[in-house]
Length: 241
Image (tube, rainbow, N blue to C red; front, side):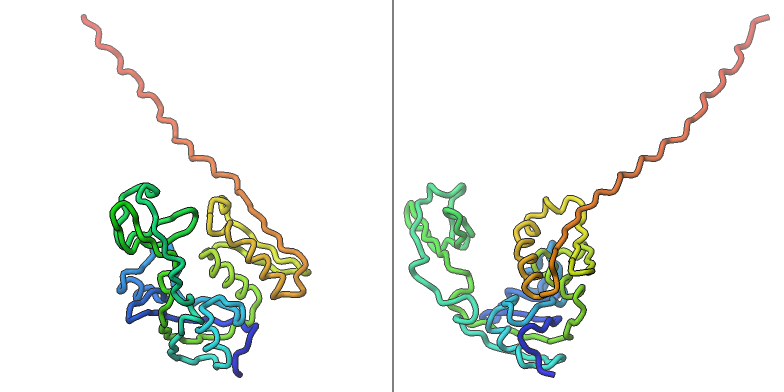
């Protein structure tokens, strides 16, 4: 049966631009291309079609396909990261940087991230466009399966947004309960995206009335006490006759 908007699928893909891979679900490919991130979770991703969980041009390609389809698609800039806009290229005094700017350096100026493309005298030319703006992208993909189980769907969304696979999920009587591991509030990525996750849970599951996040702290185990070592008895002193 052809896939349609609203379907959850497990997907394997690799994206490249000009022959250079910039994104992949395959760990070995990431290592070979020098883009491996040891903190990232590799492997197939679970996405919901129609929700822009992947590049729009890739998503458009997937809708209408069958499970098991392997394919390739060229994605034009307007369905990827947009056209390159010269208005987003600015000249910035080098005094605004903590270290001396150089070509290719990623910098942040007034909360906006960009790349130094040139340094002229005491000013740096910074391009604030997305690095892939204006480029046609190439994707290869495999649709592995359709995900029907709601717990697996939600687990996939959590991994997609936060990279975490250690959150327990239960669904009962219109309530989705997430069992959070201790100290998750120190995970910046989770804190940034959890609001989006909650919004999507209400949007995708009309029967859900409550989303509960429960953080549990188990009592620390007491350290084992070292066994007492009996003091050695003093040997009787020899007496002189």
